[in-house]
Image (cartoon, rainbow, N blue to C red; front, side, top):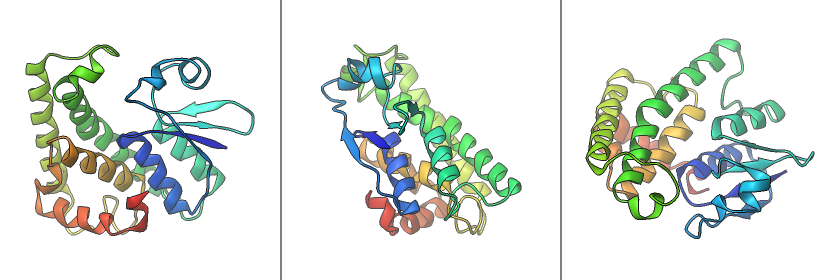
Length: 205
């Protein structure tokens, strides 16, 4: 296998997942700043969507989308379980991962692309207006506050289990700090949780 890696929160999710699994996968860097991800050979031979990361398999095929890559690695290496050991655990992890992805990660990332990142992203993809970008950031803030209120006394998003949901949330909240959306401080649970995850060795992956 080979991981096509780059800057940004999406590759960070997969790197953290790999680190938590204790795996060693060769890495090829893709220069997003230079637009390598939108040009051949990457866009023509690895991922036609022009996104990173991607995982090249032994067959020569490549799979993309971070949750798909993580699901694939979990099937190959089920221990430690980062999605779940039982059908109930897996369902709960997928539920929270989906909520975090749609309600926090998507508006945060699109808000950044259409505002601070506009100069870089405007030639590469369709963006919402700068005014809508501000609304997306408000939506991300509202949803992260909702999430904080749901967590109660849990150690991690899915209770006592550290899962893909935590990895996804951490990678994007870490990114948010870097781009002027410091959402990790929007609630008492989130703030303590963020520090717990930051202390894990995989957080530096």
